[in-house]
Length: 195
Image 1 (cartoon, rainbow, N blue to C red):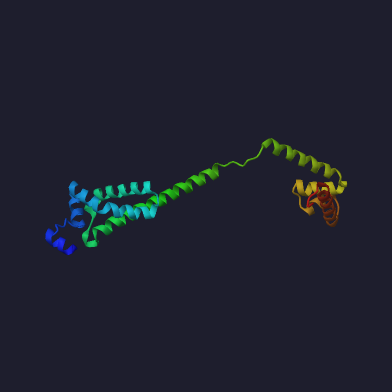
Image 2 (cartoon, rainbow, N blue to C red):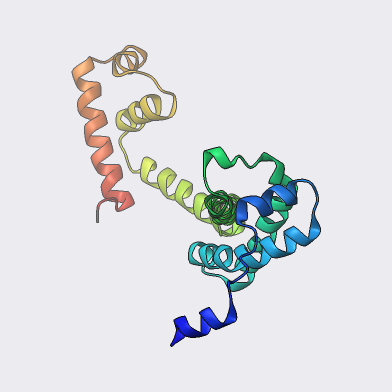
């Protein structure tokens, strides 16, 4: 039945193919661009929407692709492939570029937010705690014997080696090591470290 209607209507007039339309667009034919637009805008939008998944961005990228076709139609080479393949490749590249651009912007924003984030602390509280800790260490140091206190002070506050501490105090190296070990144990117990 359909064949009979087609035969009665006569031969269908087929418009120019896409390659011909692109060639006409390359020389500035606006009418050809309108027909090319009608022929490829739907498939371009479908491809772009599959990549972007955002209708508004998809429409925007589709318009960018169509504008790019208008501007670059002279670069199309039919010996390298079909016009539709050229258009769809352009559309796919634009869509992927938009995804990458959006991801790069998100990454930049996250890096900027992370670097701008200041540690949340109260300086006054930190200074008070530091002062309390120093006072507690001083109190615990006063609880050591004279030789223990001098050994710990020379080794840990002035940076002397055990041998240098022994020479400065005029005692054998083994004595300094023993006094340091005993002094550090008493300090640890006094400060409550390891509880």
